[in-house]
Length: 301
View 1 (cartoon, helix red, strand yellow):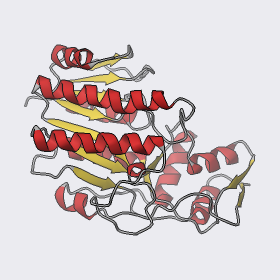
View 2 (cartoon, helix red, strand yellow):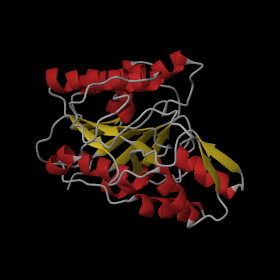
View 3 (cartoon, rainbow, N blue to C red):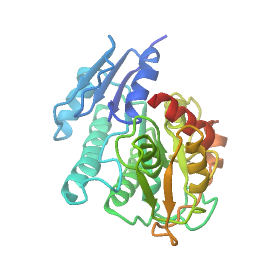
View 4 (cartoon, rainbow, N blue to C red):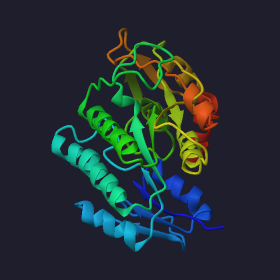
């Protein structure tokens, strides 16, 4: 059996690092691209931390290591980052992605390209159970870069017959996450015995997905052998309120000091439909908010 040589961008990040670990035994070679060195080095893993500036840089990597699959998780990973440097967000998210996909087009040997898009491409999701046809209306620059790449990659999928899957991911939580999200903030405040006030009412709900579900989803898409569409929504199996989230965290971390606002200062994001990915890829999430929070905290300790 011939195994693939896989390129993973963001290979030291929240999603990339566990992907590397999971796919090491299912690949011939993994090339990781990330400015932060992945410390979980194995024999068939090679890390690249030097900046790649143009199409030729990427093309040389694809050719040198005879890459056959790409998982693109890298970039500025959230609307809370680098807002004072919009050019950095554009450079890391749009230019990096377009150089990578153009190199893949020229190389002609890539048989699957997974792009980690985001729920932020949609912007406010005021309707429940929306499909992948829901219009893009990003509310911040990060979301705009994800929407832009998503739309551009779709044209590579359609016009150049490249095998691309775009996964529109809900907010990912998990023990490797280094950037802020409210579940992270609640857990960290409890660990540090600090007070935290959340900028919404206790009944406010949010579409989360646990990192292990995302990794399993990407793996499933990477090796999916049947026909597929271009775009898929990815989220957890439930739509928890923050009151529920706080209650679940309190089962594992005592003396939480959490208070809520009397109004919601965060835009709505309802839970979108997962029907398409369940039908086409035969993937569905396994980590309820209860299971995800328990696993998150267990891995911290």
